[in-house]
Structure formats: structure tokens, C-alpha cells
Length: 404
Image (cartoon, rainbow, N blue to C red; front, side, top):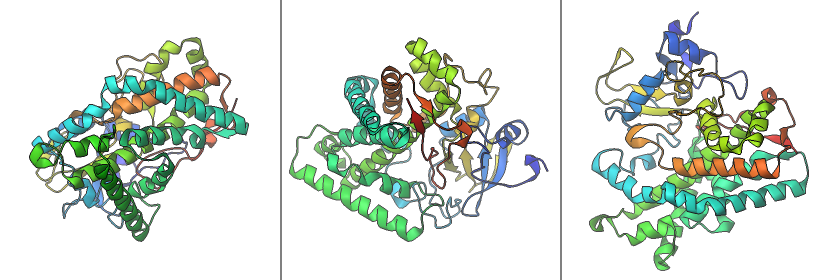
């Protein structure tokens, strides 16, 4: 039976950790607006072609109102980051969204990221030194991939260093698909909410901090052109989750991809000027980026030559779109010098990832420091034996075992 004739369970499993499911190519060529069944059992439509995904991500008719009564639930209990009420507090569209992005986005400019680079490099060097001291083999994910983005985003938000460890569990529960039950998720989110509430209270009592949350508080409330306390709180939660989880996972996957075929690592050692384009190419070829972006359609709309009914939920697979032969020459091949590289890993349009310059800078810095300090780095297991993280909305590797 072809993919055209069946309702696929989504997410679609892959046979190997770094490669895409074979169904993606079949869907792109034969069924670009496919019927899928989500972990909740609800139905949705899956978009796999570059042009369709890019169009939907930029089309204001496709909204993030995933709490609408007829929207598909992504998980059986309806919890998680996409369906939570918290997700609705930051304005979804229009002037409110533009205003929010302007206030928060000034912290994520290329200029600010350039100023943070030396600090990021120091953190990366210290973490690598600690891994080396512990002796080979090491787990690059636990030793470097996860701590580095957490340390950076906590510094940017003004979160005390001793509280960094709490966020990994809280964010995992927010990104849940099938790993945690509703009671556990609700309890973790309540703890996270309370922590952020206490942190903001402390910052309000002790103003003048040079961090995102302190400056958002100093800007005043909505009547002064700022954000409400609740919006600042949810922004802090969102940045902590988005600012560490995806990049932490991507560090492991990027290194895994480059070491899976060691000629790639050797090419970078020979020519470090390829680091920037290599980061973009690993982002494009990441076949394990996670759930994709869900969108809800409150009106009828056409996409990919198909008319979708009001109330349809669509899932945009940026990872499949990034391998579309109609958008990229040699789309299945890794080209470390590919430029331009208009991949959709950070989305597109008004909702493209606010922190993409932060993620890019962290990935570039990690690669620079690793190549310099550990040129002999290699995987201790064949790439096909790496294990994926399961049950969360973001994709990653459970461990990245390495020696040097």
C-alpha cells in the first residue's frame, strides 16, 4: 500500500538516528498534504514540501490557536507546550505580536550575539576541559551539548547559576508528547511558573539588573508600552525552554553528523572557514528535529492544490521540506560549503525563531572550540547505533559517546 492510500501515525519513525524516514520522499512526490494520526488519536494534515511549508508558516490564516475546540490535540491529555493555555498569553498575531517581538528581539540581534561570543567560547572551553579531565570515553551531549546553552540563556535572563539544573526537567515536561502523564506535567509546570514568579518578584525588588527580565520589568506595564507581568513571566519560561532545549540537542546531532563520516571533520580541520556554512548545512539536514510546527486553520484555505476545511490542524515538517529536491540541489547530500542555504529549520515569516542568531552563534562557537581543542574527536559507536530521544516535541540523541 502506498503512502497515498493510508493514514500514517505521526511522528513517523525512522530506522536510523541521523537519517530521515523513507516516507518523507514518497510524501513529497506523491502526497504532499497527507492524512496523519497524532499521538492523541486525532487527525491532522502533514505538509512535507518546501513551498507548501514556507507558505503556511508565512500565512496569517494558519494560526497557533491550538486550544480551539475543534483543533487536533497533539497529545492524549491535551497538555504540552503547543496546547497549553500559557502558549496563548504571548500575542499570536497583529500589532501585539510585532510589539512583543520588538521588545524581546533586541536581545537577540547579531550585534549582541557577537558581543557574547567570547563568553560562550570560555564556557565551551571549560566544559570540554572538564570532560577531558574525566577521561575518555565521554558523553558530548551531557558534558557540553546540554550545559552550554543552559548557562548562556540563564545568564541572559538573570537566572542564578545554582538554579540552572532545574530547567531541564521542567522544559522536558513542557515539550512532552508521550513521555509524561498529565499529573506530572501539571505539577512541573506549576513549579516552573512559581519559580519564575518568585524570580520576577526578586528582580522587581532589586532593580537595575542587566538581563532580559530586569529590562522588560523596567520598561513598565502595557500602559507604558511594556508587557504585563504575566507576559514577562511566560516570555521568561518560553525563552528558557526554547533557548536551551533545541540548541542543546542540535549540538549533539551536529557533532554526530560530522563524525558519522570523518572526512567531514577532516575537511573542517583543514579549512575552519567552512564552520559557518557547515552549521547551516547540519541544520538543514537534521532529520531528527522533532515534531514540526502545528498550525490551526479557523477558515477554509487552499494549500498544495488541496482545499482544507475550516478547523483543520496542519503539521509543517520543516525537516522534510529541507530535503526537497525542488528547493535544494543535491538535497540529500551534505555540502559543507552550501551557500545560499535557505533552509526552514528556524521557520519563516513573522513567527520565525526569535533566537536563531543565538542558536547559530552557539553552534558555531562549539564547533570552533571542539576543532581547536579536540581535533582527534571521534564517535565510540557506529553512527547507526546512536539512540534518539523519544516522546518529546524536540528531537535529539540520548547520548553522543566520543573519545579523543
